[in-house]
Length: 193
Image 1 (tube, helix red, strand yellow):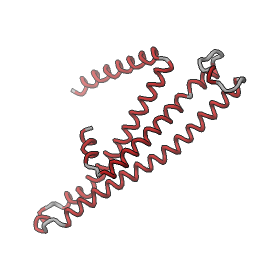
Image 2 (cartoon, rainbow, N blue to C red):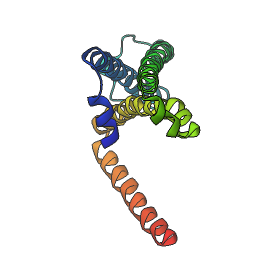
Image 3 (cartoon, rainbow, N blue to C red):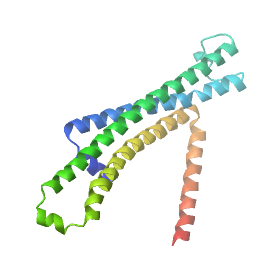
Image 4 (cartoon, helix red, strand yellow):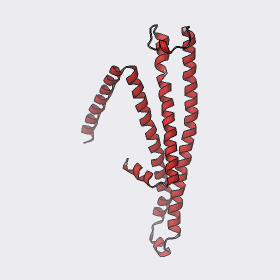
């Protein structure tokens, strides 16, 4: 996380602006993801239960029309989310590629204007590594950081939907998951030592 913050601090103003735009677009993708997953509960309630908690939100009197409406809404939301996610993923790829190219050009210019006698002392493998590997690692930090932010937002939105649907079951589920994570960490920590 520290490296991600250092990478972000090295951006120019326009690059920070574009990064914020990409993060906002990922926020929108996260909301669409949460709504599409959140529609599963009303659909399942309509199909499997006669008395459901969503009766005040139903648009039609017939159960089959309501099911059809929610299924079409679910499918269209999934399609819109995937198209929008493809667009955002493309934007982030272009953005991280621009940053990688900028860094590679910066390193290349440093080598071009380097003192020739000092340059001869450098190992060729180190020069090639600096020109190819480091910009790619930098690009991966940017890409992974923005994707990490999106995944955190999705978890937050889905968790809040679960809390709104049934907070007791959600809390019990979170406690069980936390317990499993703690136990598995203790078991693997002992095996690794």
